[in-house]
Image 1 (spheres, rainbow, N blue to C red):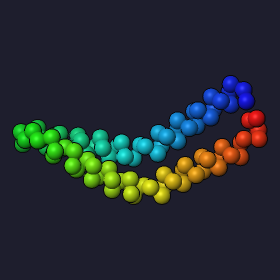
Image 2: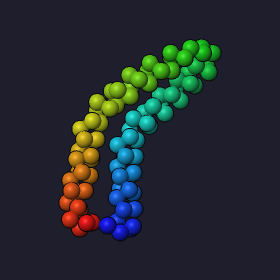
Image 3: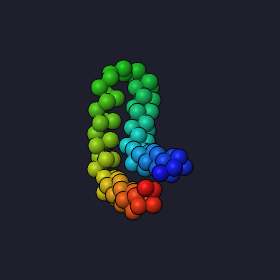
Image 4: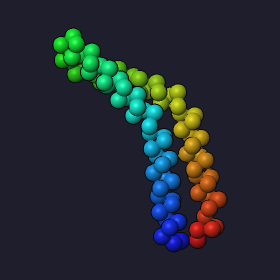
Length: 88
């Protein structure tokens, strides 16, 4: 295994990790921003108002995208196994 193939493996693994984590992170950011704006407008500064909707919507998002996440990870793993003979 040379340096270029190792860098390519790390790059692909990082890309898959970003793709898999992006939906939950985006939902968390959008919900956090919306609730922060709502708290600023109503001047209610309760911290549980921020966390409970985030946790619920992140869980729902994860349940919705779970089949896609599993398929992406399986595809990446299969690709790695197919590339083992050429990298050794």
